[in-house]
Length: 197
Length: 242
Image 1 (cartoon, each protein chain N blue to C red):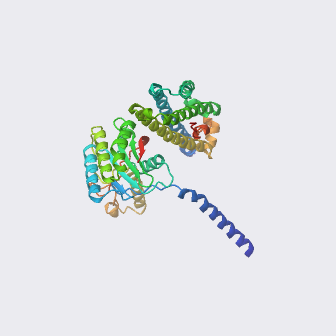
Image 2: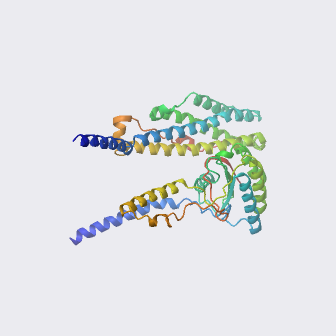
Image 3: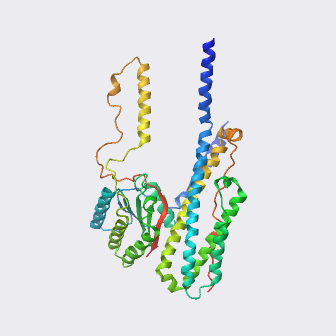
């Protein structure tokens, strides 16, 4: 009789821990870490772009008669964006994410407007310094695009993992994690600005 | 009864048709081609002797420094931006050694007149976007513009090797397709199941040793089968056109 009870207890003990992994407690945590890591990657690429801008502005300023508004637009967009930080804890907040995205989208659109305007200044276009900077900017934009895709993929995995049954129970009873926001490309950044000649 | 059956069939067919239609969008983009070696000249831009010369150079470089450089030419990108296609190929082929991420993909689209050097994470220190841009602009594009593709590829490869030189020294991949940990784990699991099965069949140990552990990583150098070493890419590099 006694043996049966303790065996039952042992079996219950093992069942509990096996269902723990079956219910996704660990995999949800793992997915959240993956989201934070890919967010870190994305943030560092955005920072890299931000660091390139002062150089770009200095090079462009040197060109004769370069229009001021285009330059100031980039400088303003950059300083505004550097004031808006998004920590991993805020990744579930749609309002915070929207603000962050808008600020970064602003940088994208003012930058592309600047680069399009440079087409009108052949000496600047031929300038080795400028060409190097343009290279670096293009490389950074590509890295941002890759990092964003990977971030969104990790968010998808995480959001799905907290919604599918039975993990959804684990989440609502124990972890209480909210779904993360995607980093969608800002609609304004997608439109190519026209150049008025 | 017959009517109900045919209704079911038509629903199934409709469902299958909808499924098929939903996949049609996949055919708009270009698929990742097969990795056949270090020089994958699907567009037929490189002459045979130069191709052999490039293969030898790239193989020697990998043997010396474990860095993998691979060339891919395609006839057309079919509307895909070269950056999107390039990162897809790099992620699928996994060029460069796992952990070191020292892979380089030189990709050219013949009809689109586009060229890109895609650089793995680990090489971004030496082969920066800047250097990649200069190689594209100064070494490859001028020759391509003059229609001298062989010259362009030779110049490009030499420049890439020179820039990446010295970044990595290490044990290159000499064994066949490298260790595949999940494969050996699977084999272990099968072995355990097999052993338990044998125990239950009244201790027949005879067949255990013989012939069960068939495949699993060879030790011989497999030079004919080039494959990526598991390296990853972050989108660094530079594109250009001619």
